[in-house]
Amino acid sequence: MQRVFSLIVNNDPGVLSRISGLFSRRGYSIDSITAGVTADPRFTRITIVGSGDELILSQIEKQVRKLEDVIKIKVLPPEESVYRELMLVKVRADAAQRAEAISIADIFRAKIVDVEKESLMIELTGNQSKLEAFLNLLDGFEILELARTGITGLKRGIKDVTYID
Image (cartoon, rainbow, N blue to C red; front, side, top):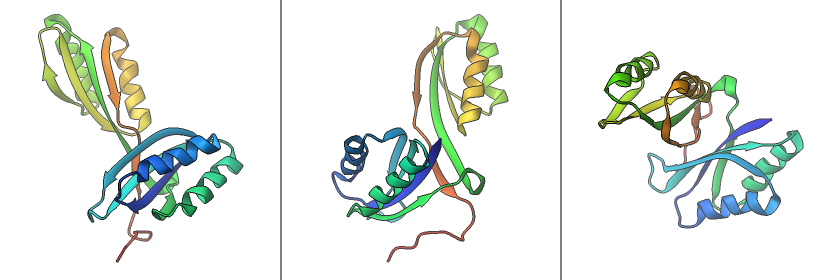
């Protein structure tokens, strides 16, 4: 079972290391972790996807909540949240294959961000199932390189917005 946690933390050196260290020390699994500064540069939003049974996921939340730099932690339930991930895919595509690759990219509203004689680089943003479906359609192409950011997300609406003074 997976759970997505959204943390607001102080934007201080070593915070990400302390949080990931907690997971490592306790033997918890991190499936995905992303971090970036918020609209207020004093704070960073970290999105962590953890996996385990209900007891482990509950323990993760409790242990992370205790960390000094953590201002707020929220669980982002899938039915109340929006998740996105960015993926860059470099595929081998000569002139004959290029049109087919571009056509597949167009279906998914992906962007062609680089074209070379023998390859294309495609940028795609969406939920994990969209990215997986895209990769499945690229089955006939040789994927030269692949980079994924991991999940980031926010809860829908304004009901649970975190305001920090």
